[in-house]
Length: 329
Ligand SMILES: NCc1[nH]cc(CCC(=O)O)c1CC(=O)O
Ligand SMILES: [Mg+2]
Figure 1 (cartoon, rainbow, N blue to C red):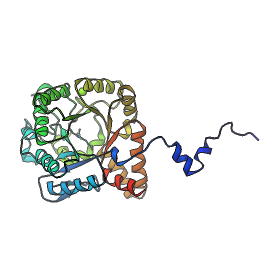
Figure 2 (figure 1 turned 30 degrees about the horizontal axis):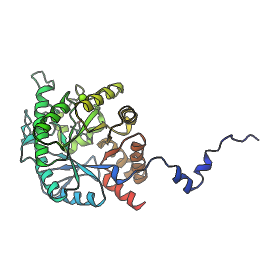
Figure 3 (figure 1 turned 90 degrees about the vertical axis):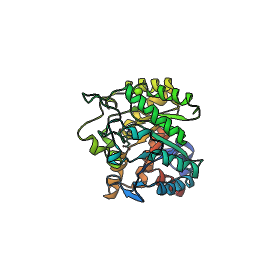
Figure 4 (figure 1 turned 135 degrees about the horizontal axis):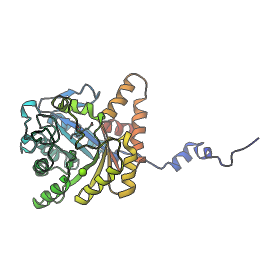
């Protein structure tokens, strides 16, 4: 009879030794909860994201209270713009009395300790659903878009946002935003750069939630978001954003891109985040609704995998549930 030379199963035999050698821990500290805010009263469900609702500012405050109570460090705000407020120049993006700006003020006055992260990108505000301004050929122009993003980021900082998170993938916007923040005296405003954001089909349900899918139609974002085939390019993008003044970087989407998270963390060793995007959430929810997957076990496993891959935190629509599940376990 031949025996194994080594027996790795020995350490897996009992719960105590499994616990002792566990390398990665997921806690509520690792979670950022993305929330959709609308101008209407009350809550409205998002059909392709079961369990996710668009919230009025009053309802947002209720959710913020629950998140604080669960010790979730921060919310990421995504406003839903009414079609009539959208325009070619996206001017509603930096309006002082805009929905995002009002939501930030309401959150910071009620829950000063809860981090508030704002989305800096024009897609909720453009009539065509692109993240930038178009020239007459329909190309998303870079530098004029950056000028608009700077105004938007300043309006968020003025409203009290703790973190501005440019998700647009224009070149040079981190440097321009950092300079403008410094010049305006917002020296504490952190920048979370969506540094390696891919042109992904997994954003579909999000575009339904914010209403940019209809505006976008058949168009895509491949002239600014990255090709899912690329990995070295992600490192170049992250290097640029760090050089321009980002405090934190993000990889997006999440689970199909954990190789990128690992390379970014190993290469730069900076605060690195990943976004478990709407399509990843929808897949798990749909399978669970069919009784094909155990929602809680699979969601917690996926979130743990982000941490194992090197992420310091995860933006997840499961954040509230996950924090509750972690508390109960
Ligand atoms: N600036 C747009 C933006 N910000 C966050 C998401 C997607 C998030 C998700 O799918 O959960 C998108 C979609 C897009 O790029 O079209
Ligand atoms: Mg870039």
